[in-house]
Length: 93
Length: 325
Image (cartoon, rainbow over the protein chains, first blue to last red):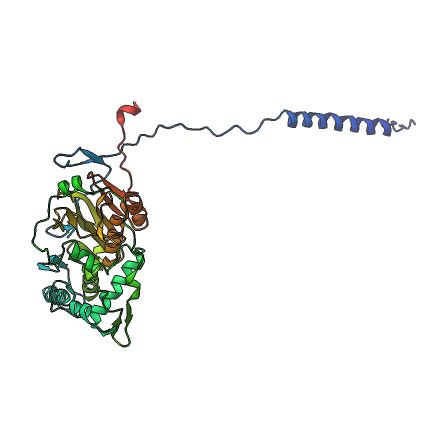
């Protein structure tokens, strides 16, 4: 009767495993390092350039007879309801 | 919303009262207006330097150093001293002799003023006014406990500097509780009432040269007052133009480069003080005086300058469609 002999399994030598691991680690480390070194900062946020147009309303004061016309930036406020029947005026007295 | 509107003459000017709805238990607006009118007439009777029978004239003529005084006169002197302190002596209530020398001896109520434009052409070189080094107003002392006023006899007091503002403030105190009100004593205006906060009053500022509307203020509380050269201006005995706003440093009418100033304030006395001080300070100084509370300056050439909070009005933006195409 023939008896099967167990096949002998060749196991890699410990030195090979160690050096292979170190080599793989080195390759991966080098790859990551390269990627980090070559990495670029995040792209800047896009700047929207808008043109702002301001217009100032200028009121012209009625010129004094015999004097030069004068313009000022005095604005007239808007009308509002429910106010006194006749205007209230402040002036020299 | 209804308001009772009363106009009458007192203190050499027009007075106007606008009174809204009364609070619970308060007198109707017409009754309140009549009470306020009587108070102002009495105020004028007691504190006018043009009425020989007034308490003010009696006080000024009193040879005693310490003089018993009514609550009204004590309040007027306190207001005058406060105005002088606030203005660094520019609004000086003791220039009675100087104003009489300038020709303002009797009331000028109803007397048309001389043409301001012509006066400006003949006026001397413009320069800011300054305080009187003597500072006689510091010699006044009000004793509320004794009900007296003391000062060196001979120093006279003029209620004109803060009188109308004080009258407006005192009437405003009496109208507290009404829905809204305006007390206008010759352009020294006090505004109050909860409803005025919701619907502000419009107050027109009169241009001293043209007499037209120069600016519109929307006010919901506080006070506004205007000081100007255009009303009480005349030719003196020497034919020179003169007016009622004196330079305390010289005792002469002040020609500062400004012909009008309008000031905002918490009280009418404060606004009146700031307006006078601004006008007397000239263009540069006036700008500083009005910077905190806001106001308007009217220059000799008629130009109007807004100052402080009034100058910081929001700008009106109108999109320019053509520019965006």
